[in-house]
Image (cartoon, rainbow, N blue to C red; front, side, top):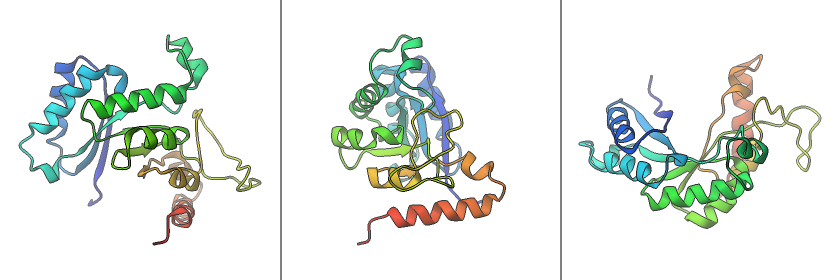
Length: 198
């Protein structure tokens, strides 16, 4: 249909299997972004990056490879339940650094970690941000009200843009809205209001 694709399959397996999955995914026409789970570790991420680099696609046509840090549905309590200690924000930044060192182009991270990841990984490191929830009636800019659904770490589109996000992932606020077209327009207006004017 024309738009490019974020192939959000979150590959997480042994290095050889992930390398094969990335190689296969590179053959899907129109893929611009592709992701793996950073929790798969440095060797797995390096294998994914190597598969991307060895692609027969010209370099400019290769999808950007991202590492998923900590899912936006998880907070420190849910991380502890699976054996990961420390604040979600600290873990996400550490995983972002590992992804950069492994040769990935960027990460998927909650809006709450964008500034810290930008400081740790630089201005050219892509940050894709899910957990976007527009303000709902009754909120204010200082104290926005949001419908969180199953997300634990969220922000409005404007907050994520101002924090330095490169891309926003916005699903249910549009697809579950009574009028998806109107919801999308409102979100686009909020994004536009937060973009720097040069």
